[in-house]
Length: 203
Image (cartoon, rainbow, N blue to C red; front, side, top):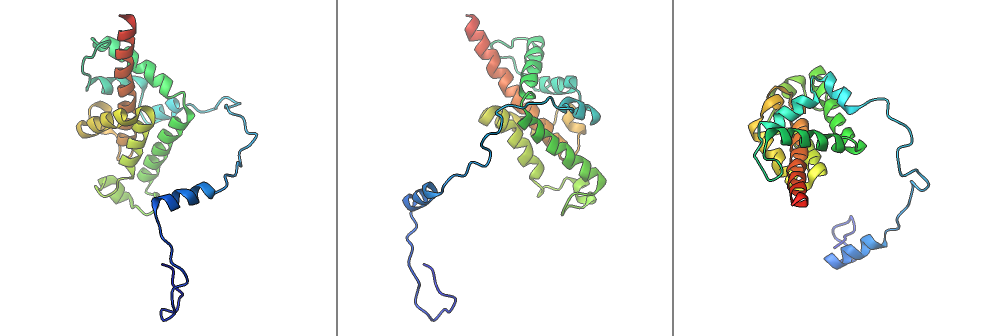
């Protein structure tokens, strides 16, 4: 019900809100294609690689693989740690070929750097260092990365790594432990799925 500002006046109109009305109104919105004519693919090679940026933070591909393998569970197609490591690195390379994922990771790196410098908006350096439990932006970002890579299965793996904090995760800062946990969780999930698919294909 919509009222005039003067509370003593009668209602201007009565609006019945139902799911059908909401859907109808959304469908009435005209879409504006502001990106018409843009290329569908990246036209120039990037000058900065996310692996190089991670290396600046002391994180290597081998660190990621070693951390993933600390939570390794044998699966069909991944009967040995050697197979798992090789497939993890393959899936990692494939995942990081997506610039959207790289930008999500980079946003976490920038947040970590700003936190160390004490220049995060609305969060003091002391609060950043304490990794206060009510600050959940780091976990939201980590969960988003895992979900982007591998959907709900990636989210499940992220939770496993986030709770146990194996390998490199134990020494990373408040943002990076979740960002890298999300990356490892998502890639690990794809590793298991790919291993099982490859195993079935070879039968």
